[in-house]
Image (cartoon, rainbow, N blue to C red; front, side, top):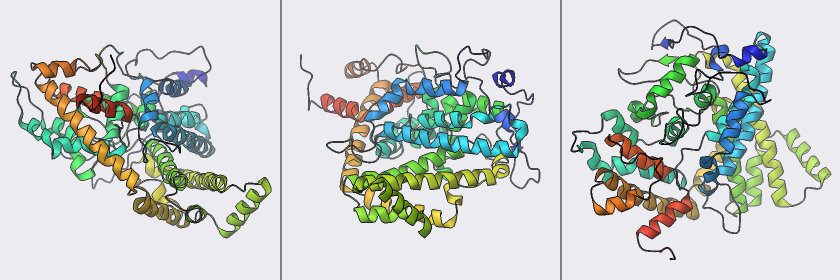
Length: 480
């Protein structure tokens, strides 16, 4: 068993199966090929470890000790970073998603092994470790100030001051290709996470974080190129990481779907559904708890939304359990209900995944797992979505941080893009000297310079971005 696990999967066909629209042949992805502990950048260095950690556990540890992961503690999730009341930030959210993801992976693994006992000696036993590591990484590419920061980057190029770059030609005759322009105008945090984990930054080792192929594939929620972003809204990798994604997709045997010539579109790596489900469960349920703490939602309304996940018999059991354990504090009651709701959703998503395993492996499963859970739970989830949209995401404090974040991000992008494209100017030189040497902001190619600017700015915390904005504008000065 150990020897089999330490060898990457032995399928000899590395050409991805293709399924075009209208074709009658049904291709299937294979678990033995999908689950690989081969590492990007160290493909020829697969060997037996002397410690007890699996390669996927090493992925988890590598992420949790990394600087980009630590910086998530100062990045907005939904609500502004805490004053006297602590609410979720990107770090706590990612940890909770990873916890739920581990449960999803372990439960799916156990049930699939009952259906496929012949896979007992494969990496199928390690789904929990793969999913939990991918969950830790899923938000690493998100810029400061939540989704407003993400929108600020895309709209700077699509409708803001950055439109001039579309037709800009350097002295060397270099310009952005249509595909590269799509990367910028549809900037996507998911694609940026894949870049952060795989890109060869200056002074770093090849392969970026040198993660396993399966963990990397698990974070690509939208496995197609930015050329398709207009119709699909989101995409999974920038042009700069196109070859890395292709290498991973081919190695794991992902199904390539039909798409216009020159574009890429693949079926999802199956474990993406579990990472997505963990994220969906956590942000929807935990946002309710935060809104209750901030008194945006009343206790009665919060309880009503959470109790909707249960039958009458379950509600009676929960009430008796809280009374038996002496849970009288209203905040603790909300916490108790929240944990029960997460458990219900986790079990429901496991059932959907296992029941639809063959469709998922054939690349034919549509939508998220949440959309396929039983009607009672789905209606309860939709009620939470409606409440969040109307009372949480449009709360004054949330809108204020989005407005401020949009302004800060747009200003910084404009300043540093201008400096990167006109480095000969005196002020540009001052700005570029502030950028860490790992970002190749003076690269020969225009696209690489602009991407280096986005690497630098998207990696900032909310606090750092605001501080830099204030210093550049003379609103605060360093003490000498």
